[in-house]
Length: 195
Image (cartoon, rainbow, N blue to C red; front, top):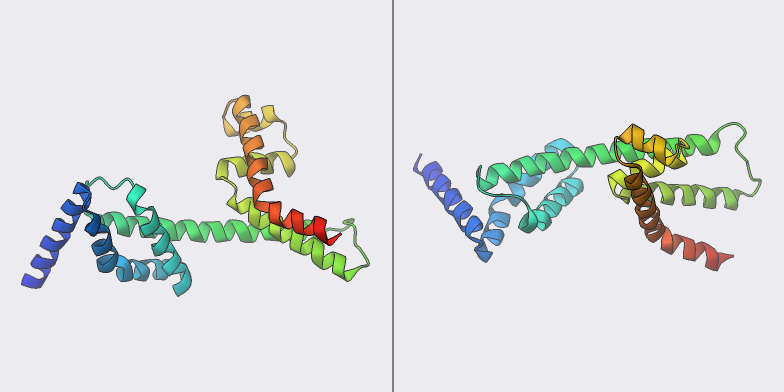
């Protein structure tokens, strides 16, 4: 019983140190909670490397995080680990759906079929790279890009559908294209050099 009381007191002291900005509090929190948080993440994501990534990213974001002491630091970290794990699963599902859509589109009847197997492999790699890059574009920018490119909606139609100003749609489209161009830059350079 005294072990749990002393653990509770030590956790409360760590919370106070964190809120005061004590630099050693970060290392102590990492040492104290990392393995427990990885266990929480593992139960959600189902594999050790992803669970470790979830916790690593959580601690990397922690100095900028919104923890203000309304709950214990452990409760805050636990909730963040659960949320980040769920977000990882959602991201995986979106990526799987996007890859499936790209694959279905490429294999659709009437889609041009090249006789060159090397060209077919290259096209599949390019489509996969575009899908992967698109998933790294900011979500709001990605949404408007998909509505424009895949669904052919105008800025006004996107604005109505997303309940945002038309000017915002234009800005998000421009920024989304810039992000996508930046992410695909190395691939585009490689393709130009291989011609």
